[in-house]
Length: 170
Image (cartoon, rainbow, N blue to C red; front, side, top):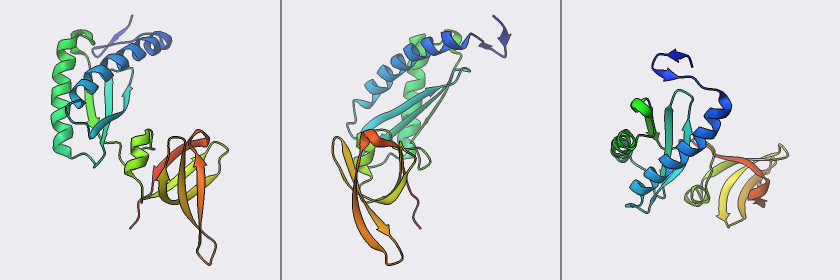
């Protein structure tokens, strides 16, 4: 093994296998902390080979920065004592997903009803409109079409969606 600046390099395959186990362990710790507030939920965990952990948390009514800071401190302390990372060789970032991140969970779709979204389908087609409804397997958006600005409701199956992003409207 090559030692560089306090991080151990390892083959990518070993990293990927170990990474899944580490993500599972971190998810359990994070969800334990989130259990106290049912309005908040874990969206995603990403780990770089340098042990930089990036955790995305959201809330049904949004999530304030002070709550993210408090969560970061609590999770960091748990990670230090958990021995998931030998020698505590990790860094932790906790944030809300932000508008540049696509919606990943059903709860995120629900909280964004009434907002303008851009939906990219698996076939590459892009639909833009106001998110009207969300069911277990589909969403409905209201599109504005043509120069006459006619509106049309379009139902899109979730399994046909590549990603959905919330649009910034000024």
